[in-house]
Image (cartoon, rainbow, N blue to C red; front, side, top):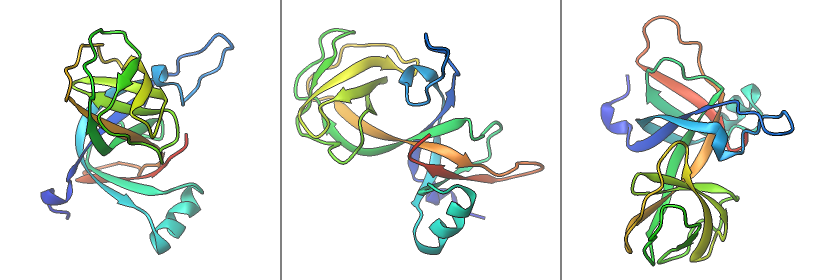
Length: 184
């Protein structure tokens, strides 16, 4: 049984809302289609070597295994947001709906666009400017509320991991190991 200290990352578990657009389609890459269920302690492991080969027999694009304590309802219709690097705001965000954000240092150059950031308790969806200090965002993502933010506030970047395989959880379980990929 794993020790509690191995769960050392705070991840956000999200559900796909199946919102239909004007063309009658659902889009798993649209942040409006996701809502945050819970923030959980997790162990995040990049798969390599034999682990990755075995996981890719289940799902060909598996890259990561995320272990969490048992929780009902963890299925392939969900995803995790995992925190990566952080910086701070280089200027205050003075309105609740402004889309231009200035960072004190560039980050996210290696992350595909778009991706999520968290400032205070507000998630934002970065739509342009990765790798620069001037980014464009969609505000109040994942059901959070737009807010004003002061200069120097922490900006945490998140990467999405889509659950590709979750165990059949019958009976008494202590933890769940989810095989995840970076694409829906």
